[in-house]
Length: 238
Image (tube, rainbow, N blue to C red; front, side, top):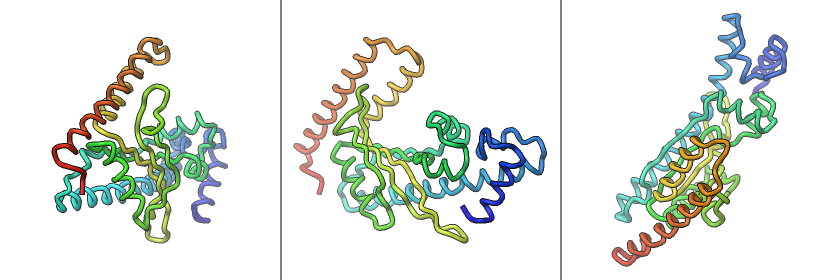
């Protein structure tokens, strides 16, 4: 945050109090001029993440088209970018006990911008992750491999937090982006699991949790079988 930006933020806190912080104050501003100033600051904050997401999306598109052109087959089935809303960011910050200021949120919440990359096979997940993180302007910050070590509920996916430079008019910002890589089977399971949990939240029956975990194992076996069949027919990817 620049000095000018910090000064404005301080003025906002003085005018509206520090109870909820900058990212929530715009919802409570009743003066039109104050609302406009707060909304503009929030828009600028979110814009940086939007641009970071666009940069990662471009990189993924280039990788997919290049691999397809080389005749290796496109390992990427589809891509879904996602940018959290201010309300979602505020809710997560409250759960974490994170102050609702732009500095605190940018330092502690690393998945404001996210992209899901769905691949054909498990090996493709790691291949695409390696290709992406080997690029010199992509800084790998954190890896959580829920494929090698699934969550207790059966969730499988490879999560990366990467930082990518975004060149603004007056500065360069290292923007964190969460990259989730998974197979079609993992994505299918995760999508249905989310819908089931949403219906039953907060009390998930124990037998349903066991069934979901078993279904995750079935999906993992399907991934292994389909990759084995693919290699028998086409050989390993070149």
